[in-house]
Amino acid sequence: MKRLLTVLAAGVPLAAAVWIPTASAETENSAVPATFACVTPSVKAPSGTEVESVTAVRQAGGTINGTGLLQGTVSGVPAFCEVTVTLTHPGADDHAKVQTWLPLTGWNGRFQALGGSAYLAGDNGVGMGNAVKNGYAATTTNAGVGDVLDTSWALDGKGNVDTALLKNFASRSQHEAAVVGKEVVDGVYGKRAAYSYFTGCSTGGRQGYAEAQQYPDDYDGILADAPAVNWDEFEVATLWPQVVMSNEKTHPTDCEFKEFTDAAVKACDKLDGATDGLVNDPERCDFDPRTLIGSTVLCDGKELTITAADAAVVRKIWDGPRTTTGKKLWPGVPVGADLSGLAGATPFPVPAAWVKLWVAKDPSLDLSTITYSQFTKLFKQSEAEYDKIIGTDDPDLSGFRNAGGKLLTWHGQADPYIPTQGTVQYRKQVEQEMGGSKRVDDFYRLFLAPGTDHCGLNGSDGSADGLGALTAWVEHGKAPRTLPATLINSDGEQVARDLCSYPEVSRYNGYGDQSSASSFRCVLPSRH
Image (tube, rainbow, N blue to C red):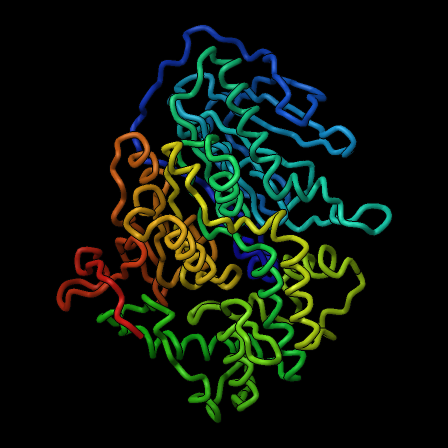
C-alpha cells in the first residue's frame, strides 16, 4: 500500500515508494564454493504441491528495473543465478512462481525472503536486487496472483471467491517459498544458508506475522513492518472515511483536511517536551477539530471556510468506525496522518476492492451508497468469512519463540492506510497470551516511529536499518532496546531519533539539540 494513492494521484512513478531492504550487519559467512555453476537444481515439491517447472538462468546484474506499478530501480547489482520454480496445488489450477536469486560471488551465507505490497504477493525485483547487492541469496513468490492493484483473481468464472488463490496470497505460498528457496540455495551452492530471514512491509509485514504464527521454523528472524494483520477487519475499516463523508453529505477538500492535520500536529507536538514537528504519542493527542470552525483556508486560489460539518467528519474519521449504537469496531486514522489518502475524491483502491469483491462479491457495488448499518454488516461479514484465512492475528507465538526466532517490527505513527493501533493491540494480545511485556521482549519487539507515513522508514519518510538490528539480535544476541532512525518532521527537516521499544516513548531531556537523538530518552508513557 506504500503511499500508493498519494503517488498515483500525482501521476508519477512509484520509485520512491518501493521498499529496499538493507542491513549493516557484517558478513558472517562468505564461504561460497569456489566452483559452482548456475545449473537447474533438483527441487522436491513442498507438501500439497507439484513442481511444474524449474529453470536456471545466469543474469549479468547491473541495473534492475522493478516490474509493475511500483517500478523503481536498483543499480550495481552483481551477477547472479536466477532460479525459477513454478508450483501448483493439484485441483486448484494455480501457478505460483518462486524466484531465487543467488549471487555468483560474495554470498554472505544468509537467506532472505521478501514479501509483497497491497495485492502483490512478492517483490517486484528492486528489493531482490538490493538483497543480492548486500550479499544475500534472495527468494520471493508471486503466489499465482497479480500486481499491487490487480484483483482479477478474486472471483472465479461463477462469481465465487477463488479460495485457493486467497490461501496462496494469505500465507501458503510464502511458506512454500521458504521451503523451495532454501532447497535451491542448498542445491546451487552445495551448502545450506547459515541464517534465514524474512523481510516485508504492509502486505509483506502481514506475511511475516503469518510465518511466525503458522510456520515458526521457517525463519531465524522476521522483519515485519507496518504489518497488515487483522486484514479482515482493518481493510473494511479503512473504507470508513468514505462512508462517513457519504452519510454526512460533507466532503472536505484536501486543503481542509491538511488544515485539521497541521493544527493537530501543532497542538500536540509539545507532548514529548519538545516542539520538534513530531507528534510522539498520537493516542494522547486530544485536539478538538471543532476549534477550527469558522477559520478560513486558501485552496487553489479560493478562500474556504471550515464548517461544523467538516469538523464532525474529521472527528469521526479520527475516532474510527463504530456501530450505530456506538460500539467501537476498529481504530481510526491516526492524528497527524494524511487524511486525503483514505478520504480523497475516490475510494482508496485496496479496501474498495476487498469490500466489493471478497466481502460483497459484487464488482458493481456502489460504495457511496453504504449506510452506517450496512457498513457494520460488511465489517462483521468480513470477520466471519476471512479471519481464519487472512486475519493473521493469532497471539500464540510460542512455536516461534521456542524455535529461537526473533520478530522485529516498526510502524509509522502517521500511517493512514494501516492504523498503528491495530499493531499495538496485537502486541498487547501477545503479551496477555504469553506472560507479559518482558517475556515477549525476549523474542518480539515493536518500535513506533513518530510522524512517519505508511512504510515510511523505507526511504519516503526517513530511514532505519531494521534488518541490521535483526541480524545483530539473531546472530549475536544483541536485543535492540532502541532502533536508530532518521525521521522527517512537519517542516520537512531530517531529525535523528532512537525509536523506543514499545511500550516506551521518546521524551526530550529538556536541553540539547532537538534534531539529535542524544537529546531524548525512552520512558514509559504518561497516563492519558
